[in-house]
Length: 181
Image (tube, rainbow, N blue to C red; front, top):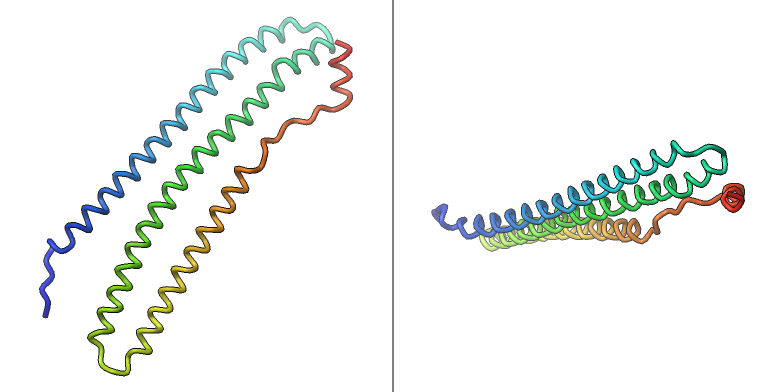
């Protein structure tokens, strides 16, 4: 009987710890990007809101209100939409980090499972070959399913990033009001 010591698993644990540290650093970078985006957009919104509020107090008629809306309100909506999109992209990057770490871990575990099945098959009595082939094909089916789910997730991400930012439509009546102002 083979004696297993903790020293046998030390290199594996060191490699996993390095992967975990790399993941934690990547996530910290993503969190920093997200906080920076939120602070910068909040500062811009606050400045524009103050200027817009001051100018709104000067509005005296409908044409002035339409002009104020075109100069302050619509750009705020567009900035808000762009800020949300940028934050979404950062969150997608963080999700990619998780997915990559999960793929790496799954790959390591799958390799260990394959190795253990092969090792068990070598020591098994004759006639168990079919059973071990079934185990191998089950593991391969799970790996293929996992890879397909990963591909679907990547396609969804690519579609989400490819959709252009929605721009608010300008109605003909609003456009005419701007021209008369």
